[in-house]
Image (cartoon, rainbow, N blue to C red; front, side, top):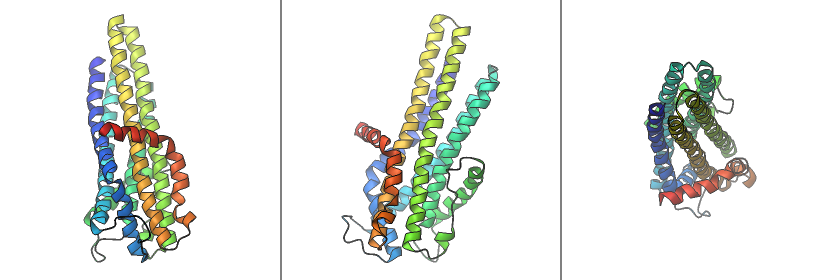
Length: 302
């Protein structure tokens, strides 16, 4: 049992590294996410951003594109890691005859996986709604992202109703600033809900797994050995909770920065302030409890 816990710890450490790398990236690029997205949308709206306190330049626009693409890649990679992790847990539970628990945890792990892929799908939709770098030649990364989003949408149809399946109509048609702001805000709000769902489902998996393994060790092992197993799985459960919290907090920063860019571009284009900033009320109220923890994470990075 201790070796099982050790193996899980190694996989969780690798997963935490993936998520933490994105946290560092978002913390340093948050300003560019907002100003770059605002600039890209303002150009599409033929609006002027001079009244906003943004440092807008082509570099910030490209950095915004790159940040969205990097976040998409991270969530896609995390999804792959979750599948491997799920297989490890399933094999171990089968070996000890815990079929009922295996089925129960499969449901929770699938919910976490679906949520993670939903985050990637949301970012793919945002990327697809942005003006292309070259109007006559779609950006390669956007094409790849949309292909992956198409795959994810099939999973979304079978999973959480919160996941936004991309609607390419706005990207292909000449959408008004109001329509585009509404679509982007809805996508970002849904993505925030998905981030919360992931954090809860992922933590639940390891809480239940830890409880079961501790009870099993108490029934089968000596007191000293059972204590060792308990300590090992408590660390595993804590690591999983920390990962879920960081996903929630990093998502709050990412989607908050993007939402601010949408609001600024919408206001510059004459969309009513309330409509342009529609994300702020819904998403920020949803993720406000996470923002304090986000600050703590960034402080730790320093």
